[in-house]
Image 1 (spheres, rainbow, N blue to C red):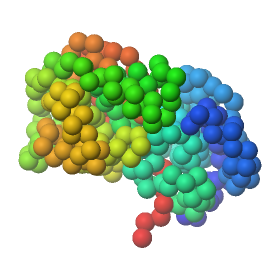
Image 2 (cartoon, rainbow, N blue to C red):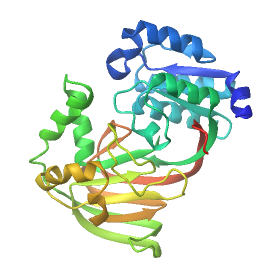
Image 3 (cartoon, rainbow, N blue to C red):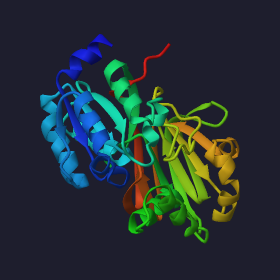
Length: 307
């Protein structure tokens, strides 16, 4: 806690003014409170993804703490900028959830309530987390297949937030399965037995690769994942879109995943034709080969103090 307070004296706040349908711009009282209670210099200029990463990369050497105010996409961009600056071992990451989904913060028990999240910044403690790299991007969670395609559809629609995701999902009920070859390295199978390399041929609707437990809106997509171990958590959804839809209430709470193929691995390579990819809700277009690898002890995040 003392370390956190000392580092907050040299902090920067990266604010996404577009997050959650421009919450930062719409709620003047909230903006005033955050401006008063959050430490350090504020950067709230509207930026695209590449520009935000470049900004964080540029300022990272000058600050001890960088606080991301936005959703999962903003957090991903801030993480990427810190890593590209080579400052992930020196910089503390703070999170204030201004986005609509806010999945990553939930795995760290950071409150969704903004004022309570600010109190975590002020009184919390650093927590070491392991993350992953997917196609060169730092991430806490990702997917390859139907949920990635849903992210793409959501961004193309005018309806944002939860209902944007719901409408995008409805459009995927006729989605065919992808034929893929999966190669996993240095991992554990469903029975906890270790392996050096495992190859699988599968027909999947989706492949979820995670370090954190949740997708947006408290969707407990990866119940076995952990930010503290040094493995990717890989789950294959070998089912039709209609069956996925029928099981969605159970999947939402992390229950149906118990019967699916699940592995721990330090590296995954997935090969197939036109595989959609997303990380932190950010769509990466389609690829014929996707590589994911774990980043052990990637960064320290300010989280609630443990009892």
